[in-house]
Length: 131
Image (cartoon, rainbow, N blue to C red; front, side, top):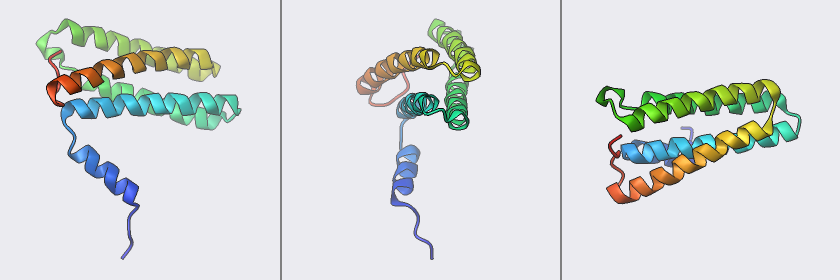
């Protein structure tokens, strides 16, 4: 019988038991981590790896977009949707140009959003705040 990686099991359990707010927070944290890896990869001239991780960031931003409650007509959801669209466009540009400054701009936006979600999760106990 093969023994799985304990870290993978821990992460799986963490995801399965997370509240919706905590899941959004994990997405932001993953996107920030992948931005950092992308920038290091560009500095190291490993453009294949940079491309891989920039696509991962875009995938996460797409998931964040899908999670928005657009049916409620909330102004916050509309604004976040526009911001996510902007970030995805900038990441595409960064990937084409291999531009670390553009990635840093997106990373900074993600860090601001992640910080706001950390506060929301603390205040609500992990329940998704109304948007």
